[in-house]
Amino acid sequence: MTRTVPVRFGDRSYDVLIGPGVRSALPGIIERIGARRVAVVSARPAEWVPDTGAETLLLSARDGEPDKNLATVEALCAAFVRFGLTRSDAVVSVGGGTTTDVVGLAAALYHRGVPVVHLPTTLLAQVDASVGGKTAVNLPEGKNLVGAYWQPAAVLCDTDYLSTLPPRELRNGLGEIARCHFIGVPGLHGLPLAEQIAASVTLKAGIVSADERDAGPRHLLNYGHTLGHALEAATGFALRHGEGVAIGTVFAGLLAGTLGRIPPERVGEHRAVVASYGLPTALPDDTDPGTLLALMRRDKKARSGLTFVLDGPAGAELVADVPEQAVADALARMERAPLDRLVAGAPAGVAGTEAAVT
Image 1 (tube, rainbow, N blue to C red):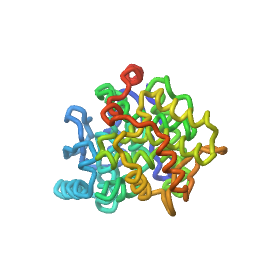
Image 2: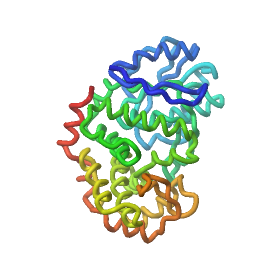
Image 3: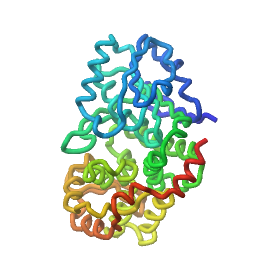
């Protein structure tokens, strides 16, 4: 069964197709774009890449934060030039969230913008990175600090790809699904994975269609991300993005409780929901609170002081100028655990999810 989620941006609107085998729709999309040449950037084996129906250049990529930088973007654009890619041609990404981000930024910059189609092959990329038009790469100073908004022409979330993923990679995507409980889509746990993906994408599509450039409600999608990004950087990316977001979601509940925004039972709900997905709920025991505070001050949402998306009486909202002492107190209340135990995960939770891929 194929699910179609529209993302509305006027004449830049596009569909997200979700289901087994939807990668077969790629030639029709390329034909609709009118591209004569296609550059496919893939972090997956060649047999994972569907036919484009046009003259194709296949470029290899590697998922992961080490290649998510401006040097990779420059190398891709140079390859586009050598191939003779024009503004009326197209770029396709095949891979996880880091590949989607890098390829999306290269497409946004090359000739000041060429059409891009995303074929996300990880759960994290299907529920989050491939939808909404955010592209970015990292600097040594922080994560996702250089980027652009560039909406894709289509997104093909082929759930067949997910059956090849190791348990930890599936768990990585569940971090983004779990945080949806607190920003408008509760009760996803236990549903078939394709339904979880569709619900998460539908939520995101509605939010980004109303706020493409993070001027307001799109901040809600960063629930749990402020500490999550800091943990990724502080651990040298030993913690994956979804794992960091999961821990950041638990922390967001503790911080909201510290500020008196939510009652203790709602604070506890944050930990319970995250744990129900088999996700980590504790800080790595060797992370320094001062380092985390310094990294969170660099968060892109911050305008003045520490800024977080926090639950409250009217639901989640952006809260600026959060007192540093409150943040430190909430960090001190977090459970601690060895990093290797956090990344090992909870096999029972992952097995239940893996069986639900349909």
